[in-house]
Length: 70
Image 1: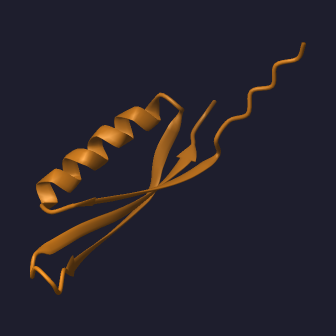
Image 2: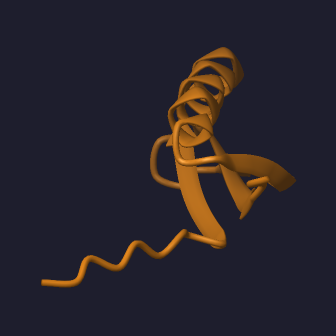
């Protein structure tokens, strides 16, 4: 029996929250989780939009992780 382990080389995750501080906490938690997979942050993009029905802000972020193995 052969066992092949492939590394994740690129990974993109999307996050959203109603408050910027909550979004920052979510992103920080996910960064720590992805470190266990030897993934490091390559790029972060974020945006604020207004929900037309409620008038509340919605904070979103896209985080691109890349493999940083040795």
